Length: 188
Image 1 (cartoon, rainbow, N blue to C red):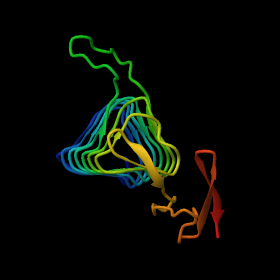
Image 2 (image 1 turned 30 degrees about the vertical axis):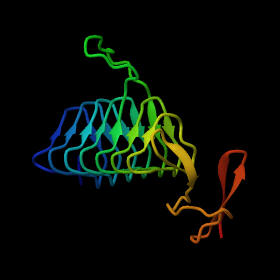
Image 3 (image 1 turned 135 degrees about the vertical axis):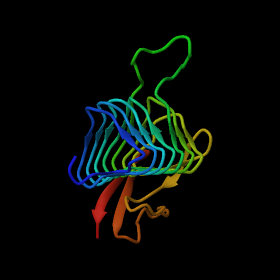
Image 4 (image 1 turned 90 degrees about the vertical axis):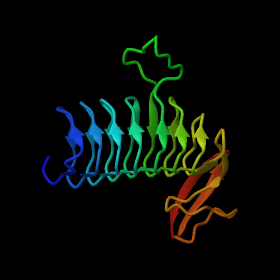
């Protein structure tokens, strides 16, 4: 693990792959079989479960557990204390024996502080989940969702700005609606 920073209070199990430039801060645990990309940052008290895949450039803030069955693609942001689940009907006396629902957070998506992503769903590319929201169904690419349960309240640009009705962003990117799906047209 060349060019990787792991704070002395953190623990990395055997069989873990961590990409160059990644920083793992205080009191983290990276479990066996996890793969973490390059140039990631894991804040204080982050737990990465067995066999989890994390892309490049991912930022995971303090107090987040990414459980087995969850995949974070490149450039995902996980706000402080956001929550993932991996079993739809958990019972202490009926363990699932390693069978977990798959949850995928697509490239460039951002998850706000204290939001919850219920397992078995996909958060779309460059989507933005508001702080405290509870995701109980798939989130479309570029969607801005908020509330309990999370519902789409708007659209966001790849750069993160909320889009106005004309679906053009000051950064130069433009979009169009195709049914209820937002499609990026390009950048001026």
